[in-house]
Amino acid sequence: ARVQAAADVADLRRLARRRAPRMVFDYVDGAAEGERSMAMAVEAFDRVEFSPRVLRDVSEAPTEIEILGRRIAMPVVLAPTGFTRMMHRAGERAVARAAEQAGVPYTLSTMGTTTAGDVAAAAPGGWNWFQLYVVRDRGRNAETLALAADAGMDVLVVTVDVPVAGARLRDVRRGLTVPPSLRWSGALETLRHPAWWFDFLTSEPLRFATAEGAPDDLAGLTNLLFDPSVTIADLEWIRSMWQGKLLVKGVQRVDDAKELAEVGVDGIVVSNHGGRQLDRSPTPLELLPEVAQAVGDRTEVFLDGGVRSGADVAAGVALGARACFVGRAYLYGLMAGGEPGVTRVLDLLRAELVRTLQLLGVGGVQGLGPGVARLRGR
Ligand code: FNR
Image 1 (cartoon, protein in one colour):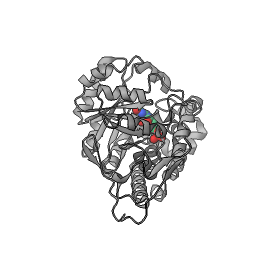
Image 2 (image 1 turned 30 degrees about the horizontal axis):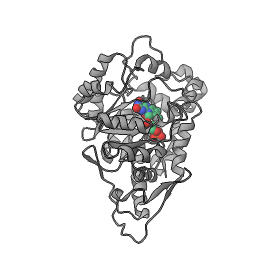
Image 3 (image 1 turned 120 degrees about the vertical axis):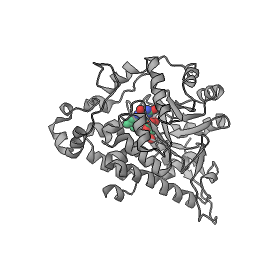
Image 4 (image 1 turned 45 degrees about the vertical axis):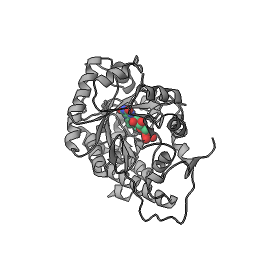
């Protein structure tokens, strides 16, 4: 009921903050180092200026688009996020189901806490994608991809902006462990969030396929598992293990985008990992038009980072994105209220997008372009 009363994603963020223990909320809400990249990604959307047409018939404002050869209900993709069952016991299954209902793709992370098979079983009619982090144990990458393909996943998102772990200072300060431990939470924190702890301690334990004795802090785990030697040449090897579409996520320069278009990926995601990796990295919304201009005719360009509303989605599409990835926004909904919380976020994004299209005087997402939105202050 409380998630239904949320008027926007910021309301759901406030609910999430109340419900989840601090270290869990901060794991989601935080970013790397001084958190400048995250702040700038969000702030860039404040600088969007729309130029609405008037006296246009906007009685219809269709939001459907086609990406990677398939129609989706609106230009939104749910981004991969690790440890999703830590945010709410319903975890990845809830997010996949909400995405299925809303008609948008959901991306399961390599660091997910639900198997590809279980996600597919929870949302059999959804368009479920898989995100790969290349791990040092090269054989294991093949096994992971085979499981995703067996589960019917046909789009692979290879994330390339984590050669090593970013420095998430909130996690360091709070002593976040994965899984979270009562030891760390402190008695007061536990008492403040009894419902979360009850849920957490009574749900299926978070299990990770890591070696015995692996570090339980996120950065340590990341650096132990992930392969920092990956290069563009490895995309060929990844291709050889994957029949479906292939996207590369974490592109932050026009020249890298061109190289990737050259080797023939199906799409690139302009992203700095929500500011969670290299701080002071380029602001995705600012970089987007140049990348779309440079490679948009050869590969599908997606935007990722800072999207908190349907108006943001409209801005991203107007400035060159096929669709916008959304990360924290749906996690706030999940933390605030499980699957209904995620559904609330997707309903809000959709309603905001439709209203924006109508107020812009464009007859649907197809009408979005640089003519109706610009970025001030560049
Ligand atoms: C992420 N992100 C991420 N990306 C990825 O490729 N694999 C992953 O496992 C994760 N894990 C993850 C956890 C959490 C808690 C967050 C917030 C983010 C990054 C994510 O896919 C996306 O790039 C950002 O979240 C986009 O920024 P916004 O939408 O959160 O501003």
